[in-house]
Amino acid sequence: MQRMKYHFESIEGVFIMNREILFRGKHDPRYGTGWCYGVPYTDHEDDCIMATHNSKMVVIEGTVGQYTGLTDKNGVKIFEGDIIKGKGKQVYVVEYNENIAGFSTKGFGVLSRPAMNSGTMNFYEVIGNIHDDPELMGGDENNVRISEDKRNQKCK
Image (cartoon, rainbow, N blue to C red):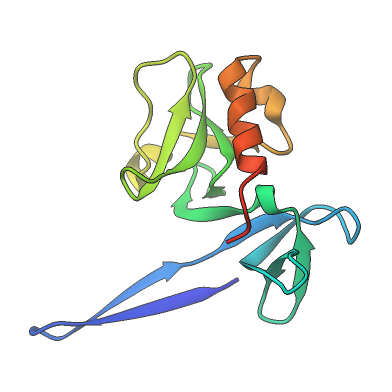
């Protein structure tokens, strides 16, 4: 697990922001199975690599997602690409939104959706992700497009 500390200086003093910087990606099937966690980069052979403090693993580029810094009602870390559900039947996909420079949720056929903050996420739970459980999003064409867009994303 990678933890980064940021120090900011101002006239009043030094501020320290503790935030966990963590990514996950699915192992390239040539080298293993399951998810690995760390920091992604592209190597000289154009493979997407997930680096941890003591190892490097090849992952599938389009499966790499960042940890949002939030947990669900069960204490499970919420990552970009996760599918979350509240008390009702509606499910949402967690995605990075460039317009707000942060994470948001995308629901299908709904006008409102939960905000991504610690208070709201206490009422939701991670039920899967777009890579392992695409059927949880239903049969809507938008759901398929999200999965394909995410799968074609380059390693960062």
